[in-house]
Length: 220
Image (tube, rainbow, N blue to C red):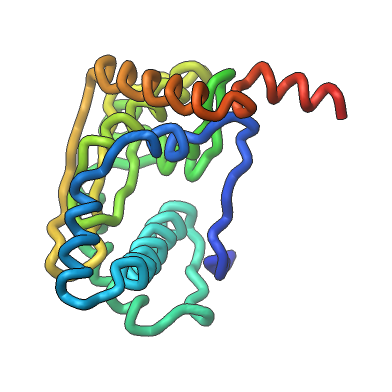
């Protein structure tokens, strides 16, 4: 069985065009700002807390990806307490999956079009349909996640993959976080919001538009 080890530093995919997360960075995130304020008021460093939470989320995400691929997660470079917390977090996912006939087609697949790129967590045949599933490990499901999901759905469709249903699965990153499922069939409005965010990003960062990228690549 193949073993997978989580890199100690985050791996960033270079799509050659803006990624979905980068484009959505132009949006304000009131919930995150409120969380920063709450942590600071309690005398805690919000950025240190956020990094620790992200570690648990990364481990939980990796556990699910290894499960889907039939791999084994190498935890030798991870904090045992974080691994234990992540294992508890993914139990709800395993229970959810038991009730579904799931056949993975694409797992963590980077896709691009002429405007943006993104990495699809899971595209699978499920209960006779074609599903896009995006895994989140946060304290809840937030609106900006819908815009990113719409962008992923559009990427799949533009690359020749039919999407019957798009789903956000929030695994949570702690024992107090609830497992949540949000399902969409129509994300046309959310896609429009994403495209406007991408447009704003490109105006603010003109060197990152696709035409400029192509010209720079041809000059090398």
